[in-house]
Amino acid sequence: MPAKNKGPLTKIEKFYLENNSTLPAKQLAEDIGRSTKSVEKYIDAMVKESNSHIAKSKGEDTGGLAGDLMGRNERYGVTVMNESASMAGESSKSTKNKFNPSTMHKIKGD
Image (tube, rainbow, N blue to C red):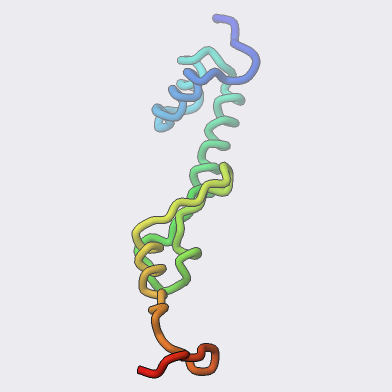
């Protein structure tokens, strides 16, 4: 029986596990020369991370503020304006050239 590798999984091993996750853990452990326990632990962490959906986007929903519709990645602190957020921002704009007599004064009458 070959010696089992120790230490953290390498990028190559993680890539192999991610792309062959349909195989049983025992087979994956034999393929990369790791213990079954370490392979199961990585697969469980991978499944948990995929269920948490780090990047969140409201999609095509236009019923809210533009800030609520932006795509966010809390892990990296990134926010991206998508099409629906842009459309919501444009639709909520008001024209700036309206005369408001309670706050403005016309010097010359028209």
